[in-house]
Structures are given as C-alpha cells and as structure tokens.
Length: 207
Image (cartoon, rainbow, N blue to C red; front, side, top):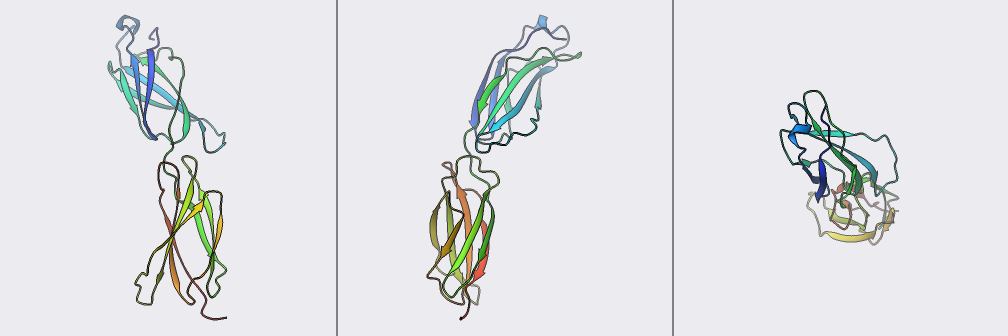
C-alpha cells in the first residue's frame, strides 16, 4: 500500500453546502504501485443549531488520477465537519492526512414544521406553528402574510407581519366576520427566507 499521506490539505468553504479541498500530491515513488487516485473521507461532527449527537456517518469521495483538488457537495449548512485525504493504489489506501476541521456557514431554513389555525371568532383567529426541522442557522424571525378570499376566489389586499423568532403563537384581531383568509408563513435566518407553508381558515358568521 502507499507509504505517505498527502500533505498541505486545505479546505475552502464556498457556500453553506459546498466546499473545495486542495492537497499536495504524494511523490510517485511512495505510491508503490499504480496511482488510482485520492480519497477524501469527510463527516459531520456537529450541527451548530441543534445539539443532537447521533451516529457519525463517514462519507468517501474518490478523485481519480493525480488530482490535487476536489469538490464536496451536499453539505449541511451551519455545521462542523472533519476530513482527511488518502492516496490509493491497486492494493489499498495509504495513511490518512491529519484531520482538518471546517465549518459551513448559515443557510436558509426549511419551512416551519406546521401551521395550525384555531379558535375562530367573529373578528379573530389564533395561529400556532412549529419551528423548522432544519433551521440551518440562527432563526431571526418569521414572516406571516395573509389576505381575504371572496366567494369568487379573488384575493384581497395582502397584509404582512414580522414575528420574533422565539414566538410560537399569535392571535390575529380586527378581521372581517364570515370571511375566508389565506395564510403564507415562513422562517428567516440572516441569509434569507425559507420555503413558506400555506393554510386557509374562516372567521365565524355570527355568535
């Protein structure tokens, strides 16, 4: 098997899901056989937004031939990763380079996990929601947009409300009675807005 590990391993984080890895090629005489390529072992150590410790799954990407860099796609935003690089010949792999730690920046969150509308009165509705399953960063706020829908399914004026990230419910007041409303709801990190979920609800006709 090869005798030495690739040296001078560098990681360049391009965005919240992509990184580029560079390394110095090993001297060919230390390969002790036919150089098949370089293998990058990488794994997620920790999500920075959730303290979940679960089974660490190591992933391996193989870069054929005498490559000196490779791309790591499909990373999770706002997470800590480790990686090392090894050279491979027809017999097996050489020793691993020292582990390199890198962090991915924040991304946009997934959609809120649910939006539930309850307690209709003549002029109010209660909204409850769950935070995104994948915050992909620090949540900064939620955005609620809503508008009335009339009997011919035309949409009325859109109202937009910013809600602090630590809230999980809201009572909307001063609505019209016996009116159907359509709601659009999403979460934000400093990077931007995630996907929205939509829901409809009706205020009651009369007491």
